Length: 410
Image (tube, rainbow, N blue to C red; front, side, top):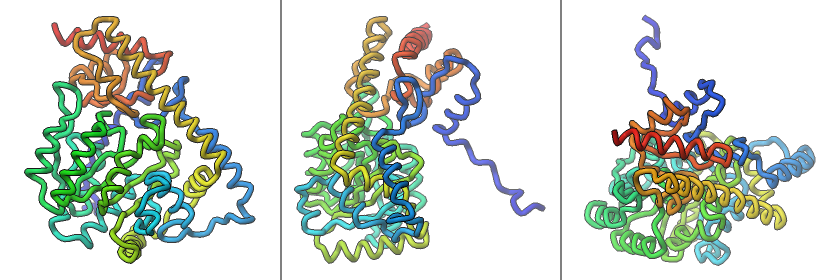
C-alpha cells in the first residue's frame, strides 16, 4: 500500500477553477470576470508607474544600502509607521500614544491568520467566536476555522434589493453574538457584494459593538481603490479607532498598489496602553516565528519607497484615482446598456455598489449559460469583477446578460 494512497484529490477553488476554465477556452472574445485583479482598458495586468520607479530606486541602492538579508520577525520600523499613518490618519490618538503595535504579514491573508492564531492562543474562550458577513470573501471562513475559531455569520446582503441588510446585521450582533466575540468587518468595498454601509450605519454598527463589547477585526484590502480617495475609504477604520475600540486592522497592498505577487500586508493591533501594545507585539512575534519566521523584504521596500516619498505618494494617489474611475465608468456603462435594452429586472445596484466586485443578482443557471454560450466566466454566485470589462467588450457583456435573463423567463 502506498503511503499516500488514501489521499483524496481536493476540490478546485471556485475562483481559481474559473480562471483555469477561462485559460482553456480558445474563443477569441472570451471574458474573465472571475479573478479579483485589476486590468487595464486593454484587458492587461497593470504595473503602476509609481511601483516601477520604486523598483528602480531599490535596484540602485541594492548592494549599497539595501541587502538581501533576513528581515526582522515583525518587519521594518519605517514600514510600520508609514502604514499606520496611511490607514489611521495623522491625527490618530492611538498612534500618537504608541498604542498600536504592528507586524508585517503575508498580505491580507497572512494578517488575518496571524490575528486568528493570536486570538486562539491568548484571548478568553468567548473571544474564540468570530462573526463574518453572509456572504464574505471565500477564504475568510477557512482562515478562522483553521486557527480553531468558531465561525458564525451575520446577515449582510439582501437579495431582494441587492443591497445591505442593515437591520439583519444589527439584530444578529445585538441578540446573537456573545459578549466579547470578534466581528469581521470589511473596511470598504465589501467582497464579494460591493455593498457598503453608509456613514450613519457605520456609526450604529460601532455603537452596538461597543455596547456588546464585541471586538472588531477590520479587513482593508481596497483603501483608495474603492472611491479613489485614501481618506474616504479609511473612514470606517478611523471611526472605530476614534471611538476607543481595542481592535485588529488587517491591511493589504495587493489591490491598491497592484502588488499581488509580493504578498505585502500589515497587521495592526490597537491597545489601551503602550505597555499592552509592547506585550501584544512580543506575542505576535511568537506566532510568526514558527509560521514563516520573517516576512519577505521586497514588497516592504516598495511600499516604503512609495509611502515615504512625497512625490511618489502623490503619483500613487493619481494612479489610484484613475483605476477607481475606470471601474466606476464600467459600472455606469453596464447599467446604462442593460437599461437601454430594457433587460428585465432592476440594474441600479450596479452603480450603487462600490469597488472591484458587483453582485449582479444573476442566478447560477444564468451564470452557467453566460459561460457555456457566451464564453463569459464568472462565479455561480453572480459575482463579477468589473476590472475584466472595458469599452471593447462591454457590448458583448450587455448583450449576453440580456440574452440569459430573457431566456430564463421562457
